[in-house]
Image 1 (cartoon, one colour):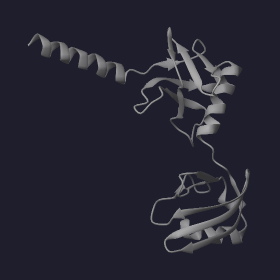
Image 2 (spheres, one colour; image 1 turned 90 degrees about the vertical axis):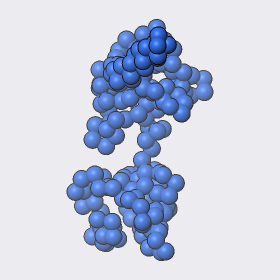
Image 3 (cartoon, one colour; image 1 turned 180 degrees about the vertical axis):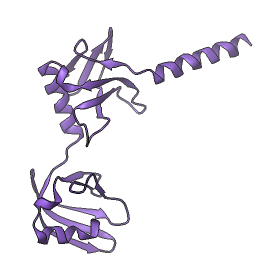
Image 4 (cartoon, helix red, strand yellow; image 1 turned 45 degrees about the vertical axis):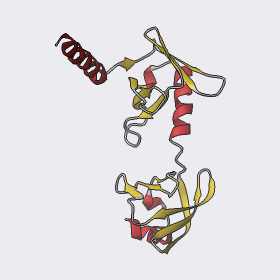
Length: 180
């Protein structure tokens, strides 16, 4: 009975810890490792190879960042409410990690879209250069973020963004009609 009561108490403590939100701020220190990873020193603890995750990647990219431990479970260490209140060097380190994790070329021109056997083959110009990719038409590969903004996920789970559909030519918009 005492063993069971201790297990329940341990479970309650673990549940409380999991649901508690820890806010990270200027007192917490991030460092880049020799291998290019990011370490965190917070509340007397050292966390190696932390991950930076945007909780609202499209609507509030520089606010509410989840800092997580490395590994399969990726337990959350804490949340940064707003990047703008952190020291400039910390912001730079975090933005570098975010740019790696959220690489999303912006489509500037659509040369062609071919629909064959349930796949759409795109040939586009992005802010990172010319590119070809394919999407599965059966999946929800095209997500409308607003009336004008689209995110397209290809077969390799790469993301591409069209920030303003109306900025494209009429011919390019017609090519997108299948997805709108």
